[in-house]
Length: 509
Ligand SMILES: Cc1cc2nc3c(=O)[nH]c(=O)nc-3n(C[C@H](O)[C@H](O)[C@H](O)COP(=O)(O)OP(=O)(O)OC[C@H]3O[C@@H](n4cnc5c(N)ncnc54)[C@H](O)[C@@H]3O)c2cc1C
Image (cartoon, rainbow, N blue to C red; front, top):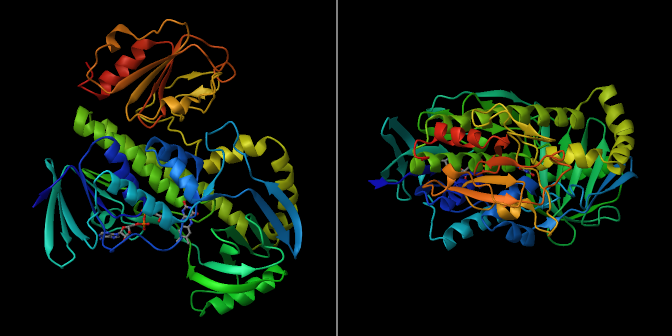
């Protein structure tokens, strides 16, 4: 029998991210994966800015950017004619240290995470299939079949099911997967092609009646991921790459020669979520907890961010004896986030695939004009980038948020990105996995007496250079940041900080 602190089922992007986070907190874990290796498929190819910020804390953002590529422009076509070109470079300028979306195949993201674990001396139990679990007040017992087919047992404090959309952990913890499946048929293919139109490192969208075709540039000349809809086909129809070749060529109204097919698949789109992501000592995260339409490239990123939200709460519960509300906040914060996400992606998706005459009219005639206008003013930077990049995710109603604000900045939000006069940005200070108390004000550090000599992971920073526009010229105030850099409290009451920490952590003395 093996013993550990956290048992992770599934070495997809969510399970691997959880492992990478737990390493930061020195929490022991075992990760079970039924396959022999990570996926070789490109699957998710968009890494959003918030995910890069999270990677940065583990020293992985630079590597991801080296491995991937930035999509610099988007072109929109209708009936063979270019309707608009949108420059994507720097669209999120001033909102994140990573003001873009990175293109990186999921296979490479997973390998990067596995390599990082290996560098830290941690391996995955490949070929190990989770079969069942039991739990009581003392912990969880997990049963799995090893690569020889023998049953093995692990005991641990917590179990986290990161085992994908068909999650057995979710099933066994009694959670229904509520939602819908869209009855339309979609395809995804990675191809090498040549075309006088689709020929740059740029994103191409071809608007068609009842849908769209998207070409994402991938590594290498003429290598693209194509995603599209087959509006007139159902699951019963036999669809091969030949069907796609004909459909795409007809719908694009532009010449294209497909030279090599690297991957082809059809799929149906689901929009589902579990009612709860927590049952006692058992949690679910990533696709095991929620799946949604591919609109906006949010799926994998949300799984990585579930893991990020859960890891520090598990760590502080194990190491700092946090009260039960801390782990429960994973459930409330991330089910709330998933519900918002499903609403947004459903709306985006309906917009891109709606089949009524009015929806077609708006998508084909109004949208290209509106998109051109939006791209020229600040609307994209202020509204669309924060949403797509996931930097605007906030937990205002969480038990971990003390309702408070200062200028435009509110508790519950991730601390906004800003750059000091010396060129350093605030996130440069915030890479350690602990609580942080920031003081903005007079030159003398105002570390409150009761926060000195603590045996609790809380760092203190004092800044005299205050970004006045953000904080409405306020001075002499505190920001308490959780380890995931969301604001727990912002205001002038130093006592609010100590009350908050005492409330959640009996060890906070
Ligand atoms: C074509 C396509 C394009 C996509 N594009 C994007 C995109 O651009 N951006 C984005 O964010 N998302 C995208 N997604 C979604 C993204 O791929 C998923 O959201 C992501 O893979 C979810 O990661 P996960 O780790 O939660 O689950 P998975 O990747 O499904 O991993 C689950 C793992 O658990 C293992 N497992 C399952 N059962 C067991 C068991 N009983 N015992 C042990 N191991 C088990 C599986 O083998 C698997 O390795 C796309 C998906 C597809 C298919």
